[in-house]
Length: 348
Picture 1 (cartoon, rainbow, N blue to C red):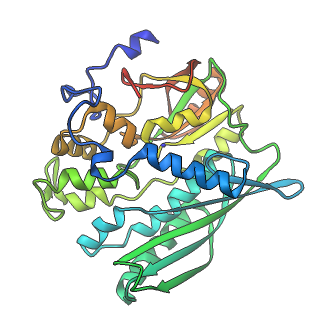
Picture 2: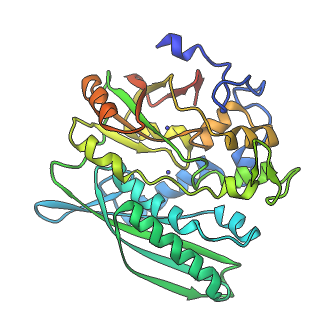
């Protein structure tokens, strides 16, 4: 799911990466994720209750199973309410990519190579054209992630499902010395990679915001050659390519900036994460923020706002990873603290 006193003083920049703030940086007023229908705190409490009842498991972004000389890792996730945008414009061609991405990226965050994927498609009524579009997206996603599609299941459940839902499970393998320890260290540099857009989280808030005064088929104001739906459906970037440079250096931990936005960085341990140089947010974030009058803080607590993956490692290793990667850069640093994340001067 996820995200220098001089850097932290730049709180006048909003989620669009440098424009004047919304006038409500701390989140008092304006549309929130909870008001749109998703309470992150409640979701985390429910997840903790489920995990507690099921028993402990190793791993944060992915569960790890010791199988001798290697770890077997599993991650399960779906596409979420992005499906409602796809349904509204009858275009499911990219949601299969999202389904694989949300799972594969969680494995990468643990230092695990994604190797195989199975999907689960639940539908109200079967539709060949829609299934073909989803299948094509799964094919493209599997190619980008480097995984094999080894099976799947389609369930027709008109009494349970309205429309459709798609989820999947990704299996991965890693040598014992290949997985990341999972705990950042004070003094580490934070290396980030840009997102491809809104990815596949926060769509409940985004949909509520943009449909106040727009239709999905309307031209996207910053780029009228595309529709609003096309911007929202831009598929999630798959970060499988960052694993090799991270494995070749002393990577302490990594985070996939997904549900919960930048607060995902706190999964790397009880530190203060000072992010002063994140990537600029794509125009879709500024559009959502203005359409819903969403505060800067709420944007960063909900969305990736331009940075989709972050790793913590010593400074010298960080510079080497940046040199070995096409589009990575140092975005911040790890300081002593208690799990606080500070992005663009905003404490989350």
